[in-house]
Length: 217
Image (cartoon, rainbow, N blue to C red; front, side, top):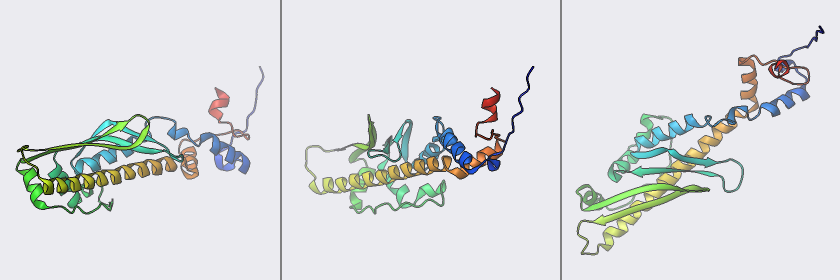
């Protein structure tokens, strides 16, 4: 029987060039699974729920992060536009994320039109949906008047302003989602995180930077 003696090292004991090699090898270890973004999704959905936005958790998509065309999108429904407006005005998302700030545009429209919606004279629905390989929001909305025999140019103009404002808010939220995903990705692939992982999980290496677990197995 032959015996082989192997010297083992902690990360900080390796030569600088070997440390760099090890970091490259483990750079994407934490983001090679499909679960690293789940906490970001959860936080985003909670923020949206405070704004009366119903998110489909299976319809959140992104591509990233450093190529042209990268982005995010999600499918949602706004079931009650009045509650949505009120929640945005009152910054209800801070009930969940008190330190989060959004610079949403101010809604400038005739409040009498909101009363018409409230009292059922106008039915309005708003949602977003996804398109294959297109990572930005797509909007779908519909409104009808109780009395369809007449034209209401002023009301229609006000509703158009409301719809554009809603699109603006949702686009801001989508940009926030993408930035949070990128922030989490960069955190998990940073040198500091990987080195901390080595320490916490007691990684050991050969002088060439091979993991002892791989050498033994």
